[in-house]
Image (cartoon, rainbow, N blue to C red; front, side):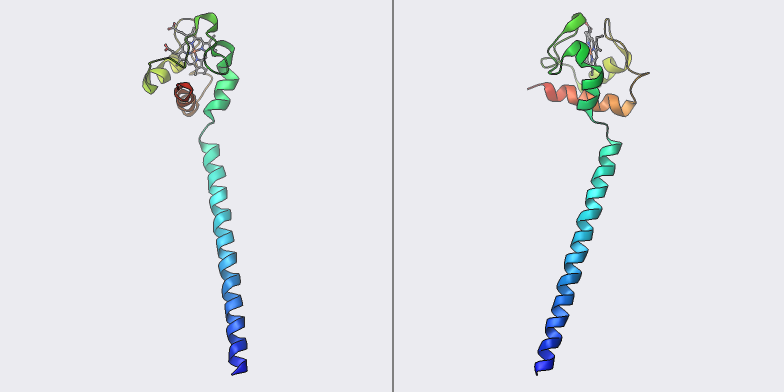
Length: 115
Ligand code: HEC
């Protein structure tokens, strides 16, 4: 009887160890999937900080060189993508500078400035 109890203890500790191990592995896999997804999706805020704040300011309101206040702009995402890609008046086109994915990300970011 005693030996059966010992067997149970050993069996359960192996089971717990295996469960802990596999869940740890699962969380590690999902974390690495997240980092690779972050690499695929450009950071719109980083793009904005690097290329746009010279005229639009860090909050989108600066309006230098006749730039529009992005926080009140009524434009849709498609119209923003078009302006960022091809430029307009004093705004330089970004199609040679940014990838389409970066333009999409920064267009999304300008929409997020709207409160
Ligand atoms: C050289 C200065 C300059 C830079 C740099 C610049 N812009 Fe502009 N932007 C302007 C000007 C000027 C306008 C207004 C154009 C017009 O009068 O039609 C404008 C307009 C816009 C509009 C349209 C707003 C509206 O309501 O009409 C968006 C969206 C925009 N910019 C996004 C960006 C983004 C995103 C970047 C960075 C990738 C950027 N801009 C960089 C000057 C700039």
